[in-house]
Length: 120
Image (cartoon, rainbow, N blue to C red; front, top):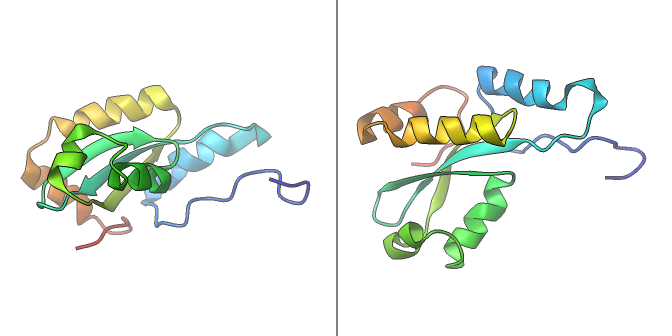
């Protein structure tokens, strides 16, 4: 971040309208704030993994390098299929636990919402 660009640029992936509002709220007031994200990975065997990070793309690289969770390491290379920014770590953790409690069918429905970044 230089003097010309005092705030970090928004993530390159698409954001859902509600998530965008939360993201903008986290950056409001000219304060430097860390934006936490809930993310979902589709593992090599097709299973889904949910986690949180301040940088989901970098976290994906760590998972695929074998330095993330044991679950992803066992299930094979992963792809980032969903991201959702949250105002802080606590909100991200709550949302992560909520999504983890859902059935696979409900999680897949979340991936199909318009405006979400996902691969098939």
